[in-house]
Image: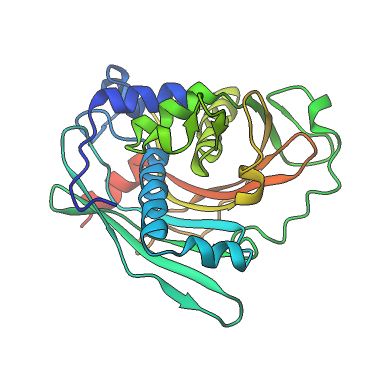
Length: 309
Protein backbone atom coordinates (compact mmCIF):
# COMPACT_ATOMS: atom_id res chain seq x y z
CA UNK A 1 0.00 0.00 0.00
CA UNK A 2 1.13 3.54 -0.58
CA UNK A 3 0.06 6.89 0.79
CA UNK A 4 2.11 8.55 -1.92
CA UNK A 5 0.40 9.91 -5.03
CA UNK A 6 0.48 8.09 -8.35
CA UNK A 7 1.41 10.14 -11.39
CA UNK A 8 0.50 8.70 -14.77
CA UNK A 9 2.56 9.66 -17.79
CA UNK A 10 1.41 9.32 -21.38
CA UNK A 11 3.55 6.19 -21.73
CA UNK A 12 1.42 4.50 -19.04
CA UNK A 13 -1.67 5.21 -21.13
CA UNK A 14 0.01 3.99 -24.31
CA UNK A 15 1.06 0.74 -22.66
CA UNK A 16 -2.35 0.07 -21.14
CA UNK A 17 -4.41 0.88 -24.23
CA UNK A 18 -2.15 -1.24 -26.45
CA UNK A 19 -2.23 -4.16 -24.00
CA UNK A 20 -6.03 -4.15 -23.91
CA UNK A 21 -6.69 -3.21 -27.58
CA UNK A 22 -8.58 -0.09 -26.48
CA UNK A 23 -8.70 2.34 -29.41
CA UNK A 24 -10.89 4.95 -27.71
CA UNK A 25 -9.88 8.37 -29.02
CA UNK A 26 -9.91 9.85 -25.51
CA UNK A 27 -6.67 7.97 -24.77
CA UNK A 28 -4.87 8.64 -28.06
CA UNK A 29 -2.07 11.21 -27.81
CA UNK A 30 -2.94 12.58 -31.25
CA UNK A 31 -6.59 11.78 -31.93
CA UNK A 32 -7.99 13.31 -28.73
CA UNK A 33 -7.87 16.56 -30.70
CA UNK A 34 -10.38 15.15 -33.20
CA UNK A 35 -13.12 14.70 -30.59
CA UNK A 36 -15.79 17.38 -30.92
CA UNK A 37 -15.83 19.73 -27.92
CA UNK A 38 -13.41 17.54 -25.95
CA UNK A 39 -13.20 19.24 -22.53
CA UNK A 40 -10.22 17.28 -21.26
CA UNK A 41 -7.53 19.20 -23.18
CA UNK A 42 -5.43 16.08 -23.64
CA UNK A 43 -5.48 12.29 -23.37
CA UNK A 44 -6.98 10.73 -20.24
CA UNK A 45 -6.19 7.58 -18.25
CA UNK A 46 -8.23 4.43 -18.95
CA UNK A 47 -10.95 3.57 -16.47
CA UNK A 48 -9.66 0.01 -16.24
CA UNK A 49 -6.18 1.35 -15.47
CA UNK A 50 -7.65 3.01 -12.40
CA UNK A 51 -9.53 -0.20 -11.56
CA UNK A 52 -6.27 -2.17 -11.77
CA UNK A 53 -4.50 0.34 -9.55
CA UNK A 54 -7.31 -0.21 -7.03
CA UNK A 55 -7.05 -3.98 -7.41
CA UNK A 56 -3.32 -3.97 -6.65
CA UNK A 57 -3.52 -1.59 -3.72
CA UNK A 58 -6.41 -3.63 -2.29
CA UNK A 59 -4.28 -6.76 -2.68
CA UNK A 60 -1.55 -5.11 -0.61
CA UNK A 61 -4.14 -3.93 1.91
CA UNK A 62 -5.59 -7.44 2.31
CA UNK A 63 -2.12 -8.91 2.82
CA UNK A 64 -1.12 -6.26 5.37
CA UNK A 65 -4.30 -6.84 7.40
CA UNK A 66 -4.21 -10.67 7.10
CA UNK A 67 -7.61 -10.69 5.38
CA UNK A 68 -6.61 -13.20 2.71
CA UNK A 69 -7.01 -15.93 5.33
CA UNK A 70 -10.61 -14.86 5.98
CA UNK A 71 -11.30 -14.84 2.24
CA UNK A 72 -9.86 -18.32 1.72
CA UNK A 73 -11.41 -19.94 4.81
CA UNK A 74 -14.89 -18.62 3.97
CA UNK A 75 -14.77 -19.26 0.23
CA UNK A 76 -15.28 -15.59 -0.67
CA UNK A 77 -14.50 -16.44 -4.28
CA UNK A 78 -16.07 -13.34 -5.86
CA UNK A 79 -14.27 -10.05 -6.09
CA UNK A 80 -16.66 -7.14 -6.69
CA UNK A 81 -15.96 -3.57 -7.74
CA UNK A 82 -18.53 -0.80 -7.95
CA UNK A 83 -16.88 2.26 -9.44
CA UNK A 84 -18.41 5.63 -10.27
CA UNK A 85 -16.31 7.95 -12.43
CA UNK A 86 -16.75 11.59 -11.42
CA UNK A 87 -13.92 13.24 -13.34
CA UNK A 88 -11.11 12.21 -15.67
CA UNK A 89 -7.50 11.56 -14.69
CA UNK A 90 -4.89 13.24 -16.85
CA UNK A 91 -1.18 12.57 -17.26
CA UNK A 92 1.31 14.35 -15.01
CA UNK A 93 -1.34 15.28 -12.44
CA UNK A 94 -0.90 13.27 -9.20
CA UNK A 95 -3.68 10.91 -8.13
CA UNK A 96 -4.37 10.08 -4.48
CA UNK A 97 -6.11 6.81 -3.54
CA UNK A 98 -7.91 6.41 -0.22
CA UNK A 99 -8.98 2.98 1.05
CA UNK A 100 -11.25 3.02 4.08
CA UNK A 101 -11.02 0.45 6.87
CA UNK A 102 -12.55 -2.95 6.09
CA UNK A 103 -16.11 -3.50 7.24
CA UNK A 104 -17.01 -7.12 7.93
CA UNK A 105 -20.71 -7.92 7.60
CA UNK A 106 -22.21 -11.30 8.46
CA UNK A 107 -25.87 -10.68 7.56
CA UNK A 108 -27.20 -12.03 5.29
CA UNK A 109 -23.80 -13.47 4.28
CA UNK A 110 -20.18 -12.81 5.14
CA UNK A 111 -18.83 -9.82 3.22
CA UNK A 112 -15.59 -7.86 3.41
CA UNK A 113 -16.12 -4.32 2.14
CA UNK A 114 -13.97 -1.23 1.66
CA UNK A 115 -14.97 2.22 0.51
CA UNK A 116 -12.61 3.68 -2.09
CA UNK A 117 -12.05 7.17 -3.44
CA UNK A 118 -9.55 8.89 -5.72
CA UNK A 119 -8.68 12.56 -5.95
CA UNK A 120 -6.63 14.46 -8.49
CA UNK A 121 -5.97 18.16 -8.87
CA UNK A 122 -8.07 18.82 -5.76
CA UNK A 123 -11.15 17.10 -7.25
CA UNK A 124 -12.78 13.74 -6.64
CA UNK A 125 -12.31 11.62 -9.75
CA UNK A 126 -13.64 8.27 -8.58
CA UNK A 127 -15.84 6.80 -5.84
CA UNK A 128 -16.79 3.22 -5.11
CA UNK A 129 -16.25 0.08 -3.13
CA UNK A 130 -14.49 -3.28 -3.27
CA UNK A 131 -16.28 -6.27 -1.74
CA UNK A 132 -15.39 -9.93 -1.26
CA UNK A 133 -18.40 -12.26 -1.32
CA UNK A 134 -19.46 -15.88 -1.75
CA UNK A 135 -21.74 -15.07 -4.69
CA UNK A 136 -21.48 -12.40 -7.40
CA UNK A 137 -23.04 -9.05 -6.49
CA UNK A 138 -23.79 -8.10 -10.09
CA UNK A 139 -25.79 -9.93 -12.76
CA UNK A 140 -25.91 -13.04 -10.59
CA UNK A 141 -29.30 -14.12 -11.95
CA UNK A 142 -28.28 -14.23 -15.59
CA UNK A 143 -28.48 -17.77 -16.96
CA UNK A 144 -25.75 -18.60 -19.43
CA UNK A 145 -25.85 -22.39 -19.30
CA UNK A 146 -28.08 -22.75 -22.37
CA UNK A 147 -25.75 -21.04 -24.83
CA UNK A 148 -24.41 -22.84 -27.89
CA UNK A 149 -20.71 -23.62 -28.20
CA UNK A 150 -19.34 -20.09 -28.49
CA UNK A 151 -16.08 -21.35 -29.96
CA UNK A 152 -17.99 -22.40 -33.08
CA UNK A 153 -19.54 -18.95 -33.63
CA UNK A 154 -17.71 -16.38 -35.76
CA UNK A 155 -16.01 -13.52 -33.95
CA UNK A 156 -17.81 -10.13 -33.94
CA UNK A 157 -21.23 -11.60 -34.68
CA UNK A 158 -24.49 -12.04 -32.75
CA UNK A 159 -24.88 -15.35 -30.95
CA UNK A 160 -27.82 -17.11 -32.68
CA UNK A 161 -31.06 -16.99 -30.72
CA UNK A 162 -29.76 -14.29 -28.34
CA UNK A 163 -29.13 -10.54 -28.11
CA UNK A 164 -25.43 -11.08 -27.35
CA UNK A 165 -22.66 -9.65 -29.48
CA UNK A 166 -19.63 -11.95 -29.35
CA UNK A 167 -16.04 -10.75 -29.24
CA UNK A 168 -13.36 -13.42 -28.97
CA UNK A 169 -10.05 -12.62 -27.30
CA UNK A 170 -6.97 -14.67 -26.47
CA UNK A 171 -5.15 -14.04 -23.22
CA UNK A 172 -1.48 -13.18 -23.45
CA UNK A 173 0.96 -13.02 -20.55
CA UNK A 174 2.93 -10.17 -22.12
CA UNK A 175 -0.16 -8.00 -22.50
CA UNK A 176 -1.12 -8.68 -18.89
CA UNK A 177 2.33 -7.67 -17.64
CA UNK A 178 2.22 -4.47 -19.66
CA UNK A 179 -1.24 -3.59 -18.37
CA UNK A 180 -0.09 -4.15 -14.78
CA UNK A 181 2.96 -1.95 -15.29
CA UNK A 182 0.85 0.74 -16.92
CA UNK A 183 -1.41 0.69 -13.85
CA UNK A 184 1.30 0.94 -11.16
CA UNK A 185 0.94 -2.73 -10.20
CA UNK A 186 4.13 -4.72 -9.64
CA UNK A 187 4.15 -7.38 -12.35
CA UNK A 188 6.65 -9.55 -10.44
CA UNK A 189 3.97 -10.10 -7.79
CA UNK A 190 2.03 -12.01 -10.46
CA UNK A 191 4.64 -13.44 -12.84
CA UNK A 192 8.01 -15.11 -12.34
CA UNK A 193 9.34 -17.01 -15.33
CA UNK A 194 12.23 -18.59 -13.38
CA UNK A 195 9.83 -20.32 -10.98
CA UNK A 196 7.15 -20.72 -13.68
CA UNK A 197 4.62 -18.66 -11.73
CA UNK A 198 1.88 -16.93 -13.73
CA UNK A 199 -1.01 -15.62 -11.66
CA UNK A 200 -3.42 -13.45 -13.59
CA UNK A 201 -4.88 -10.31 -11.99
CA UNK A 202 -8.64 -9.91 -11.71
CA UNK A 203 -9.28 -6.76 -13.71
CA UNK A 204 -7.21 -7.30 -16.85
CA UNK A 205 -9.62 -9.80 -18.51
CA UNK A 206 -12.44 -7.37 -17.69
CA UNK A 207 -10.58 -4.54 -19.40
CA UNK A 208 -10.96 -6.32 -22.74
CA UNK A 209 -14.68 -5.50 -22.69
CA UNK A 210 -13.93 -1.88 -23.56
CA UNK A 211 -12.43 -2.95 -26.85
CA UNK A 212 -15.41 -5.25 -27.43
CA UNK A 213 -17.80 -2.31 -27.00
CA UNK A 214 -15.72 -0.20 -29.35
CA UNK A 215 -15.75 -2.91 -32.03
CA UNK A 216 -19.50 -3.35 -31.64
CA UNK A 217 -20.01 0.41 -32.04
CA UNK A 218 -17.67 0.47 -35.05
CA UNK A 219 -19.73 -2.21 -36.79
CA UNK A 220 -22.82 -0.07 -36.07
CA UNK A 221 -21.10 2.90 -37.78
CA UNK A 222 -20.93 4.97 -34.59
CA UNK A 223 -19.06 8.26 -35.08
CA UNK A 224 -16.44 8.36 -32.32
CA UNK A 225 -15.40 11.90 -33.20
CA UNK A 226 -18.80 13.60 -33.42
CA UNK A 227 -20.59 11.57 -30.76
CA UNK A 228 -18.07 10.36 -28.18
CA UNK A 229 -19.32 8.37 -25.19
CA UNK A 230 -17.82 8.45 -21.70
CA UNK A 231 -18.03 5.90 -18.91
CA UNK A 232 -19.98 6.87 -15.81
CA UNK A 233 -19.68 3.61 -13.88
CA UNK A 234 -18.46 0.02 -13.80
CA UNK A 235 -20.04 -2.79 -11.78
CA UNK A 236 -17.79 -5.84 -11.84
CA UNK A 237 -17.99 -9.31 -10.31
CA UNK A 238 -15.01 -11.58 -10.95
CA UNK A 239 -14.74 -15.25 -10.04
CA UNK A 240 -11.28 -15.44 -8.49
CA UNK A 241 -11.35 -19.26 -8.59
CA UNK A 242 -11.47 -19.12 -12.39
CA UNK A 243 -8.95 -16.27 -12.44
CA UNK A 244 -6.54 -18.63 -10.67
CA UNK A 245 -6.86 -21.09 -13.57
CA UNK A 246 -6.08 -18.63 -16.38
CA UNK A 247 -3.02 -19.17 -18.52
CA UNK A 248 -1.32 -17.88 -21.64
CA UNK A 249 -3.33 -18.29 -24.89
CA UNK A 250 -6.60 -19.12 -23.13
CA UNK A 251 -9.70 -18.21 -25.12
CA UNK A 252 -12.02 -15.61 -23.62
CA UNK A 253 -15.43 -15.18 -25.23
CA UNK A 254 -16.90 -11.80 -24.32
CA UNK A 255 -20.66 -11.37 -24.61
CA UNK A 256 -22.13 -7.88 -24.83
CA UNK A 257 -25.82 -7.07 -24.46
CA UNK A 258 -26.97 -3.48 -24.92
CA UNK A 259 -29.95 -2.58 -22.75
CA UNK A 260 -32.77 -0.29 -23.92
CA UNK A 261 -32.38 3.30 -22.79
CA UNK A 262 -35.18 4.64 -20.61
CA UNK A 263 -36.21 7.80 -18.79
CA UNK A 264 -36.18 5.79 -15.58
CA UNK A 265 -32.43 5.20 -15.77
CA UNK A 266 -30.50 8.45 -15.85
CA UNK A 267 -27.20 9.90 -14.72
CA UNK A 268 -27.38 11.11 -11.12
CA UNK A 269 -29.17 14.45 -10.69
CA UNK A 270 -29.66 14.88 -14.45
CA UNK A 271 -32.11 13.86 -17.18
CA UNK A 272 -29.33 12.25 -19.22
CA UNK A 273 -30.30 8.69 -20.11
CA UNK A 274 -27.67 6.03 -19.47
CA UNK A 275 -26.60 3.61 -22.14
CA UNK A 276 -26.00 0.35 -20.29
CA UNK A 277 -24.22 -2.80 -21.41
CA UNK A 278 -24.23 -6.12 -19.61
CA UNK A 279 -21.04 -7.98 -20.39
CA UNK A 280 -19.85 -11.48 -19.56
CA UNK A 281 -16.50 -13.17 -19.95
CA UNK A 282 -16.78 -16.90 -20.63
CA UNK A 283 -13.99 -19.42 -20.80
CA UNK A 284 -13.85 -22.20 -23.38
CA UNK A 285 -16.26 -24.44 -21.46
CA UNK A 286 -18.63 -21.50 -20.84
CA UNK A 287 -17.57 -21.04 -17.21
CA UNK A 288 -18.33 -17.40 -16.33
CA UNK A 289 -15.13 -15.57 -15.44
CA UNK A 290 -16.69 -12.13 -14.97
CA UNK A 291 -19.98 -10.24 -15.06
CA UNK A 292 -19.98 -6.50 -15.73
CA UNK A 293 -22.45 -3.69 -16.20
CA UNK A 294 -20.92 -0.64 -17.86
CA UNK A 295 -22.83 2.63 -18.07
CA UNK A 296 -22.03 5.34 -20.59
CA UNK A 297 -23.48 8.69 -21.64
CA UNK A 298 -22.83 10.95 -24.64
CA UNK A 299 -20.23 13.59 -23.88
CA UNK A 300 -22.38 16.26 -25.56
CA UNK A 301 -25.22 15.60 -23.09
CA UNK A 302 -22.88 16.12 -20.13
CA UNK A 303 -21.56 19.36 -21.62
CA UNK A 304 -25.11 20.55 -22.34
CA UNK A 305 -26.13 19.81 -18.75
CA UNK A 306 -23.10 21.69 -17.38
CA UNK A 307 -23.84 24.68 -19.60
CA UNK A 308 -27.36 24.93 -18.17
CA UNK A 309 -26.11 25.21 -14.57
